[in-house]
Image (cartoon, rainbow, N blue to C red; front, side, top):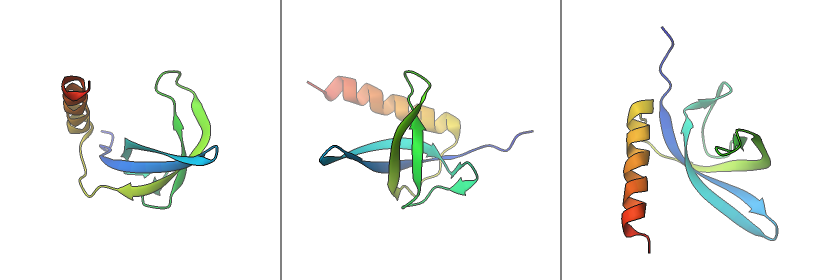
Length: 88
């Protein structure tokens, strides 16, 4: 049986022209064998195209909460529903 991978919510940052872009996403606790922590630099896969993005992101912060894949998807759906209900 494969070992379950848990996820942590992370805030990421990268340079964008003259500014900085930030995003929040769920990442596995380990990425290519490296524990996710502040300062780790990584590239992401675009969820729309399935292609790896060329831009490199730096992990700024990592939540203390560790979630199973099922609970992570559930929290993500809850957030999406909340945004649809509250965004104008």
